[in-house]
Length: 123
Image (tube, rainbow, N blue to C red; front, side):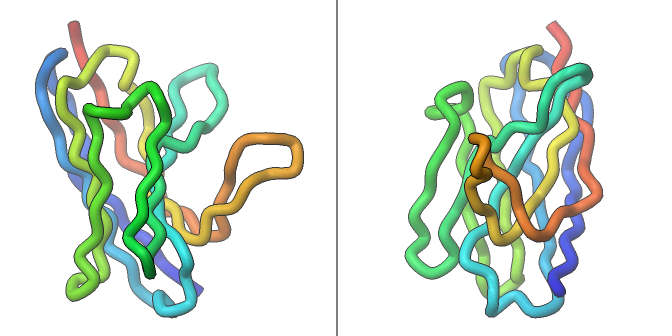
């Protein structure tokens, strides 16, 4: 089992920045990837960024590429999402996830989830 706890959400004006943190505990050595998803009201949950824990390789959704950066601190068992140049359309509940995998029907999901942290971007 892996437990994930997010922090760092909040309200910010468009153009601003936030850094989300995800502290992981439990059987972390067994995870192959960690990432962030988000879900806006009335929309499906979507993957934002993923980091492969062994290689450090990263991938971003086109909507955040160049603005968001995912990183990991292995000593602290923590994954971060640095968000810059925030837009109102980035407003959503952000979820940390571990062991991401693609769905057969399309999109991605994960084996482990955090409880979410709210990000609100005002114009």
